[in-house]
Image 1 (cartoon, one colour):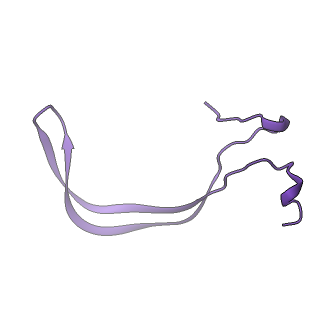
Image 2 (spheres, helix red, strand yellow; image 1 turned 180 degrees about the horizontal axis):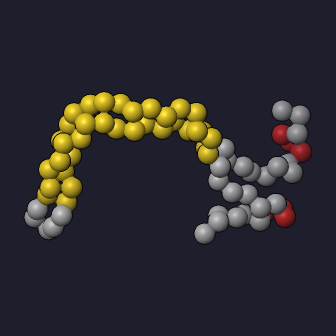
Length: 68
């Protein structure tokens, strides 16, 4: 699904701009459910963190926002 809106004859889609990505080194236990009454325990040693902007688009033909 491309999430095209088509409002006012203009197709819109989601866009993300990645600003920063880094690895945070930490140790904690994570539990993954593998069955109704069972969980698998695993040690997590690092987490990848991504900071991004969601560039939402709207009605670009609206004259109210033309001068901003």
